[in-house]
Length: 568
Image (cartoon, rainbow, N blue to C red):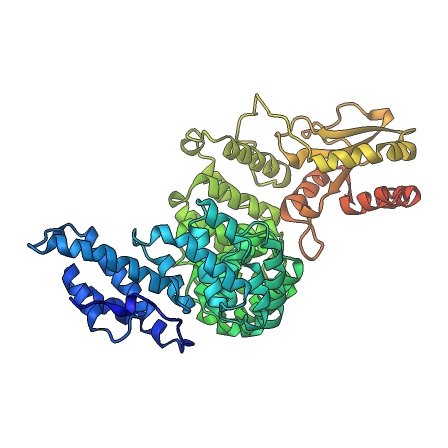
């Protein structure tokens, strides 16, 4: 074997034209053809010049051969080769360490070679210096980040991670619609520098959003779900992007995006308009019922009573009833009840009940109770369906408390509201559980109660958090503030009696959660008011948001006027 003079005194490299880096994988393939150390050394001697990438390829192949048991059986020259191997490795490493080619160093970090492992911290120091000197591209900085983050269990690498931010700031002008995704993807591994990089990303996202492709934006949305540091301005940018690109989305991608926004708990006018636009353009071509379910879940999550979206979705449901699996029926139906939305097709509820009667044996009792309640929220009474659900062979098998609670609510509500219902069908709950009032409502009542006392305390008995007796234990029958004339403030709420209760005032404090996007109450609250009206009570609705605003601004006059005007 001839003396490898190129390895003795590696010279400073001339500026790279990236050809060597691009040929790195070809060099690897060439060395992979070598089946033993002799062939590796022979290939090295044939090289006109030992470049860093050639040296690296040789080192990796030597490591592979050493780790392969089948190659560890040497001929009579084995000891000579092993001696030569040690000397040659040292010289190859010197060549690699002096490389001007940053990509070669990054390739070293990625290699699994045990021979290179002790040298990797030194290469990291070299790369950090090059980052500070602004010698790495955005792609290379992200590649370096990924190595450090994946090996952050080692203190040396962990300490280096938050020092690279300067390279991204210096290369800010080189961040584009393609590599911005790589920067988003490394956020999870940052600590001290995370806020700085988030600010940079938000700035670039606002500049580049119109150029970002669909797959890239899906990845960015995934990062938004994990990281909680983004400003509302960046969320708005996502909405603009969706509206601008809605025409290019297929069913699966829109479902993915809508699901991601639902998980983010974010919605705005642009997102809503984008969904409208998609349904207008493609409703007749939608093949996936899962997309419509995703859109309805989105509507329910954000309490959107959007006529166009709900109408198109309801028509899709009616048009595809035969092919929609029984397990999906609740997902289609419940949204309409929860939002207290009546589809324009007057046969919607009738057709829906017919389908449920045909398939109820294939459905879970939990889903059926929710569906029945959704009917009732809209003032519909599916009596045939209720009779099937309430059959003794069904109710006797129920052991879930929440299902039994819903059945008692259905039974009580129908008995009150529907003359055709021959209830109650269930025995009275002998061990009713207490109904807890929302802590926000409880707190605001404590703050305003003395004002109500000053207005009505002389003539009325004032009771807070009052659960009507003889009814099931449910928030439907929990009155936030009850005003009763002192002359008849006893137990007047026997719902079987026909006595006049119009002097009794039930005050309900509605949280922001109780309202849809159009400021109308959600289905459970609509049914609650309807039930209290049936027993003859005067129901007054007060907005929590208004009460809280008036109280915190110390506007006592305004607070009293609001209560007084509402109760008139």
